[in-house]
Length: 279
Image 1 (spheres, rainbow, N blue to C red):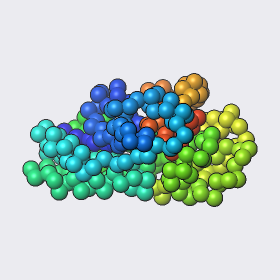
Image 2: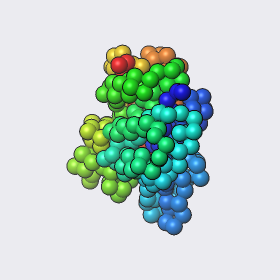
Image 3: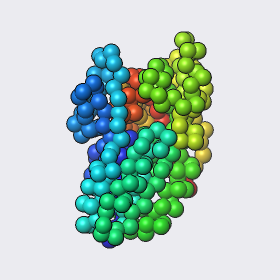
Image 4: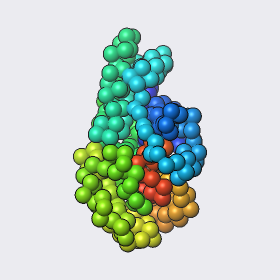
């Protein structure tokens, strides 16, 4: 039986890819006041960003419960005896701990392995996609885990922010804390370091930020796949994807919308690229 792959909605894997590769995606929750929605299940990205721009109070987010993961494990255990779970960084969410705790709620002896990716968005999603392709091709659990770990070591996220306001208010600013209050006329570009957001550089304009994202991709050797993501500016993502397609085959570029949960902290106008180098 093929290994089943599980991740969370912060991997930003699109529905088309999910259906094609048979990935099971466990949603986090985003709440506006007393209204709660399962990420990308009960609220679309478009609906979320429309509200984020209008609302005066920042939404809150919650990780899936252990029971939510246990339900997935028990369902998949009827189809396989091996489940690999790859989730976002434990420094950004309690999702990893919920996935671990759920293992004790499954009683049928199915082998379940949980990996803390230390990543988020498509820097996680691209690795999950590679894992699902390996599983579909018949690779063993241990082979897939080795492939995942090799790719995580060579996975990078670079994100352009119009503002750090949302990241700071949401308490997910990590090592970029020192930039708050000093960026009135410049735009921050952040990356992931040791599982949390960290400052990379700053630029003077949105155009310069998009150029910087492109140049990072252009300067990276041995690219296996690239993710291009946006919150509220699909035209920017489309243009960036076209530019990248001149140096990376189009079939290796994945375009997606940044999930509502991540968008809570990224804010409108954010744009990101994720790169996975060949293991």
